Length: 452
Image 1: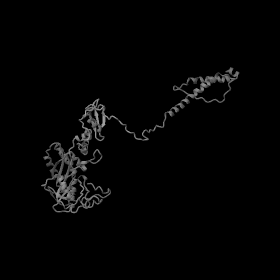
Image 2: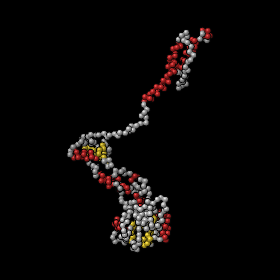
Image 3: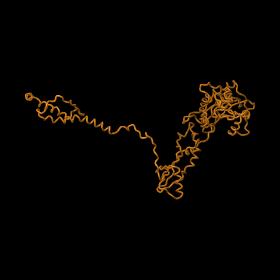
Image 4: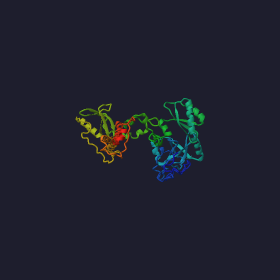
C-alpha cells in the first residue's frame, strides 16, 4: 500500500484502521487535496473535485469501493452510513463479506457507473458497516496466505498437466473464498483442478481468465523507458495494439523493440498514433509519383517531424536519392498535373545555409604548432651532426703546410669519435690519426725525426 504523495518520507506508516487521514480538508499533510489522495495505488484514484460542496456525500447512495489491484465495485449505502474517501468498509459478498476501501462518494459516482457501462437494472450489493478490529485480523491472515497458495496451486496444475499459468491469487476479506487468476492460450478443462484446490485449501474456489496485459498490470514492473509500467499505474482499459500504429509512426517492425514485458505490442504505441495520422494528412501521398525531364521519382520515405519527403527512381530500392521539403513536393505535383515537368526535383535556386559566427568553430589544439618550427628544429639537429665533418675538412689541408710556417698549436679543440651502426668508425675518422702523426713529425727537430 502506497502513501500519500504529499506525505514526508520520514512520517510513520499508515494504519489501515485510521479513518481520519482522508477526511475533507486534506490528507493530514496538505490542505490542497480534499479527498484527492488515496492510500492505495493511484491507478484507480480519481480526484473528487466536488468534495467541498455541501451535502455531496449524501447526494448519492451508491459508493465506489476498491479491492486488491484493479478490482472495484459499486455498492449501495442502505444503512445511511457517513462514508468518505479512504474509509475501510465491509461489503456484501457471496458467501460471507469482503473488505475494501471507499474511493469515491457523491455526485461523481453516477458518472463512474456510466463509464463502467453498468445496466440500469443492475442489482447493487450492500455495505454492511465500517470495519472492526476483528474484521481486520481476519483480513490480514487471509492476505498472508495468498503468495504461498499461488505457488502451491502452480505445482498442482503442473501435476495435472494443464496448459495454464496461475498468475495471482486473491482471498476474500473473511477468508472464505479465493479467486485464482490464470492465463491460457486455449480453453482449459479445470474441473479436476477446482476439486483438488478446494480439498487442499478448504475454501470456495473461483477461476478467472485474464490476458497477458492484465497479468503484467497485476504483477507490475519497470518498462524499457525506466518508469513503472503504465498498465500497473494508471491505465484501466487495455485497448488492442496493431502493427499499423508502428507503421504510421515510421518505426521499424522489430519484435524485440516493439514488445513489452507481457510479450505483446507496447500499449504506448497508441498514445501518439492519432497525432501522426493527422500530420500525415498534411504530407503528399505515398502513391503519387513525380516526374522531371530526366526521370520519374517514387516516394520512398516520409519524415513527419522534419516535414520532408525522400524520393527514389526505383520503387523498391533507394536509387538516386533526393530529399525535398513537403512544400516543394506539392509544388512539383501541381506542375505535373498542369503538364509541366521541372528540370530537377530539388529547388531551382539552392541557397546555402548561413554558418554561425562561432569563433571556436575551427579551433584545434595544434593550431599554434607551425611547420616552420619543426623544420628549424630539424636543421639545428642536422648542423650538430655535420660539425665534426666540417672541422675535419677544414683542417685536413693543414697537414701539407711546412713546419717553418706552421706554429705549434697548444690548444686544440677535442674531437668527438662517432661510430656507425656496425660499430666501425667512418673512413674519414680512420685517416685522422695518420694526419695528426704527420703534423707532429714535421714539427719535431731533425734528430728526433731521424731516430723515429
